[in-house]
Length: 567
View 1 (cartoon, one colour):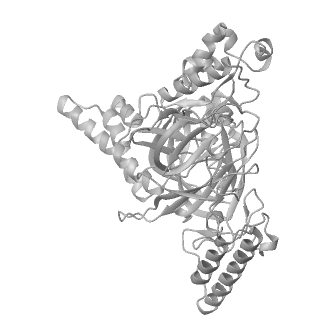
View 2 (cartoon, rainbow, N blue to C red):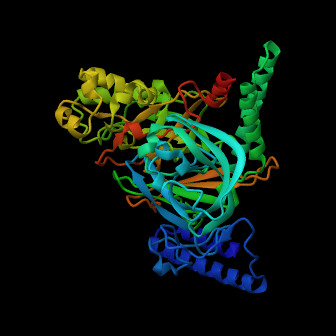
View 3 (cartoon, one colour):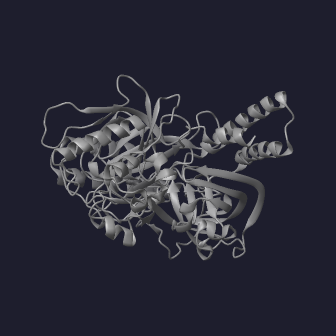
């Protein structure tokens, strides 16, 4: 099977005629299917492994792909629906994501028989469920998870606290049946949130956060936190008596670390090996989440996907080099503007589906702001961003390019939060406010009636970048949030832990240019060949922005620094 496919692929790649290539690719598929069928008759397929139980497809938003349709029936010409070795035969599991103001996207999950909207988040590792016990702090109780309705709910004994850029949550260990389309984990552990100090949750539109980070990282981070607490506790004991409250705080972190030894993430429970994520480009358009995606493995003779090795052992991250502002359209020669990671300086890019914008070091943010200011002085008009340069970079040795619509747009919402939450991550908003010379009270609201009074004067076109100076052993950390997925169809691939652990780790990521309908482009992987174009820019409500749990103005050790404060 492998030899026939390789031979036909080699011949196909040597031919220039597209139809001939596809004919041979289809022939390779047919040959592979015949060999697979013959093998199945001799060796019947093994039973479904325990832990990943497949139920009949419920009538919800999740839809399995058609079971190995003939090539002429494929939805997209040129695509072959060949299952990956580890996927459910002939299908993947995909769902259209609901767009919440272009700053959050949700997928439907079923917990204890209750349909909930969950934010797919590759920057976190746990399943957080907002409970009706949380009252209006977490949103409308009628839409939240109710443990009393479930027939399979079981409470645990460990409590936990998650701190985000926009606030914090308190939760307790719980178990229930969790379904992702036809995939079911009958006894899935999660954190049931019973208290929150996050104003964003009251109007967020979601009831859960689905952590899709590499499963092995959850245990690693819990151990690091417990070790940091133990070290701090030892210091306190050597100086003076430790209070009971301090010991209680410390013991809770030790309990969370013990919990992490046996707890399995949903990715691990369902035994998933890959998933893909893409967001529609047009404002308000949906996205797509695909479990066990076959697309990166089903293109014979195509270079549409570029593969990047995961760098580090915690997040979906990769080596980052040469971040710069490219040449403006129509300018064939000139100097590109370096933004960071030049001259051998190491940087890391974290690819995060749960972060609303792109997060850059503060110095890079001001460079982009200066470039936009110069562009406007030369007659640049925010109604047409096509004359602004792209942001270009190399990630894992591959070239990428983000158009200006990914980093420039409109801001909206209650900007009274400028002096608290939003200003931490978007300090250039203060400069906009001061430049417009509006009194704070007038500038604070630019929606509803207040917007009508100031809209003609208030210029809300601004850089859509968040700031996070996150030091690490690998240099500066840049976060490729949701704007990145409007340009690139991204597949995350898990693999065995080379250190001998039982939990899978992030191995590699595959990227393809996404078309307007959020499908992988059939074109060659030419990341930098972006033609000038005019697209509608985004309008972002700054009060609804999502940032990763570990991002904070004080640095990446947020949890540990706050542990020390509690102690």
